[in-house]
Length: 127
Image (cartoon, rainbow, N blue to C red; front, side):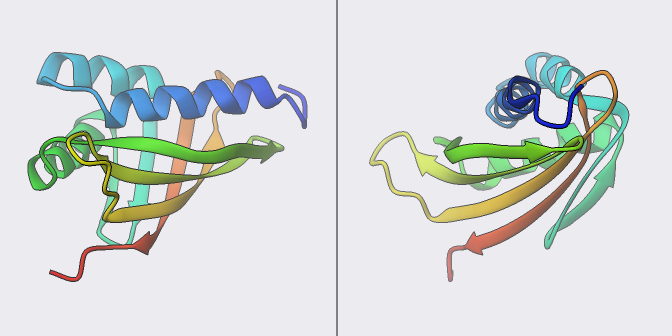
């Protein structure tokens, strides 16, 4: 992967959102395996996990907390040297409200899958 291969970053982020929006245990497990390396990790203010099973559990927990919502990318992916950043919102499919938004920084493994995610929450519900 070259230092400025934007398609690799965009592909990795697309797989990331596929995982976050996957429904059902089997589809979620497949999407997590496609998005993250075996030793992949996810860290944000509310979670610090590694490995596919733990990653899937965090995603399933978000679905339980916010049923009827989906994660959507905001803006473009910016990347260099196996590192990329992008914004996102958690959007209600019913009314378009987005009570949660954030910004993630990812590192990619040599195979193009995500090795690490460092997430930041910019907007969270007060209740």
